[in-house]
Image 1: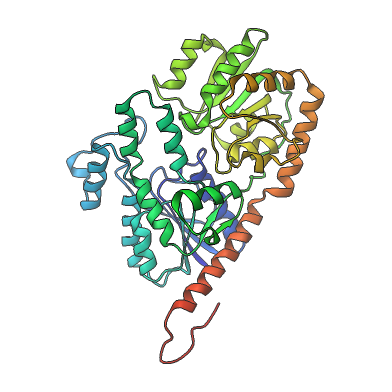
Image 2: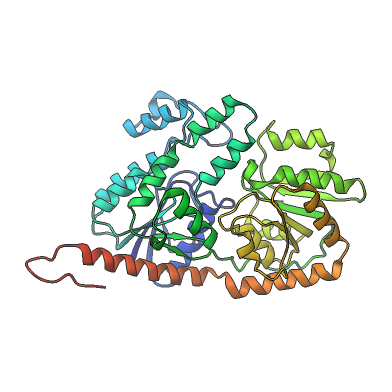
Length: 423
């Protein structure tokens, strides 16, 4: 098959979108398919054999100058103008503007692709692509309505809540687009239920295909660092539950020597850094970001314990990657995390999301039980090897493509009385 894989941003080393694009495109190519990735900034890192077509935005949120105002000579068309005006009025434009640019590109390439795969763009341009006659499938990792709900609950003022409602205004578009699509992939049963409820999508249109874990994630060859706790958080956002972890960690520091290593880039002067200072734990907390895959594996395998304190996750790929590294886990009983770690409690200790005391106790008990940490780590790796393979993800996704292509061909009118052929 000839596959166009669309993603409005594809950050290579963190965040589900970029990781998904890289590994799925590689494995689909290994199966013999042709994959062309269409992406806005930040562009993905892709493997040999996968083509990248850049769909440049104005890159309004780039480091080190997010929310920048472009120079006049940067504007190319009215889509660029819409992108800036939406940002100036506190909205988030990228899903909509990327989808318009992608539709414009694909209009000139009818016949080049057998299937278009939308990676949670859900912009109005996706409906234009569908109307052009392309068989279309989308992946929704989780409905961003949960991010909005948690952010609004954490907002300190009515002005902040008003700003957040405007920022998340693109969700009305995403819900409308999702309801008009014929086939949606998602990554967990939890996300399947939540998408159906929050976006009003027919649950029968939703198919679960879990994510995979790259083979590079493996147990460490060096001794783990005594007292080190690692946590992954792709954003300095309330949904990741880092505030709960920091408070629990501060309580643990009163009775033992520990180090907390956060794999994230905090917002300068943001809530995470402020809380660290309020708790007086600055010298015990370190941040790591922008590292290579090899360095990430080493960091994950260096900890005695890892913690995933999220208030919600559509899948939680970091949880599965940590399991692959045989790192013992304390995780929140939130979203799809229980699905990832399994129902028997062998691979992780589960705690109530947002409960500082419960998280503190679970970490302390695991720190005091090296035998259980070893057994938990080994059980986690076994589960990953059995359940989460990118090769299996690609095979299942390709089968879903074939189904959508066949259904699309069946809906097309026959030519000169001849029946429509099926693939």
